[in-house]
Image (cartoon, rainbow, N blue to C red):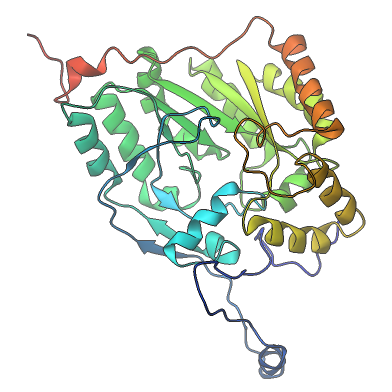
Length: 357
């Protein structure tokens, strides 16, 4: 892997044009040359946290193939910097680029706990699992400072409402006591994303995430404390981590996971351009091979928006990947499954305390 010419600690290596903007800007070579001569930094590569104030926080999920009905996102943008992240495109709606802006301009919704509580107290609301987060990681580095996810979990506990979590950060263990309390009433399910057992691969794919060792230890700690964990082998990228499916599944079992899930990578919207730029800089020896194999999984395109097909792909390579995951499930998780979360308690706790009558 060639890391000498890459921006340290970032997935995307540049900003790409926002499709909603007529005009765009670029950093000219003469400006870069001037900065070099003057000994100045052309780009300080700093992360900015920007407060935003939405009117609601719980979102109805319209896509029929994502496995959730409602989601909420306390943050927009994500400092983890995963190069393949499907959420990058959503940053364009806020006026930013799906590239470096997605990792360095983090929008913070400090009112999320209050908005969540208002939603759960509505008479019309019927308990259904709300997933944190359907878009960006609720335990990304910003959470250490703002603790919005922790406050939201306290709301879920107070109102006895089921919640799912998707993360790849060991910071989740900070809230272990809250998670244990939720688990006692079957109100919590955690999805831990682990894409590789190789730290070298992890560092280039997901530069600011927890190490693989920490993630596996997190799965074990959660499982040992009665919190059900599903490990997401997602996304599977041909010729990058596709050879690791069985070892990943075995590791998930050994550390206490109850099931595994997977998707095949798809590079929708601006992500295709970002990914191509990244892979030619980090893996030039196999860049074209990887890109062609991804295309072969999606009818000759990097992007795939077809419901029912986009997550699993098609063609011989996709078939091989899906068959390996099927084999892994039969071999390691034949008699295991994630439990259904409890939707019955919430109605008795609509006011944040048990109704006696």
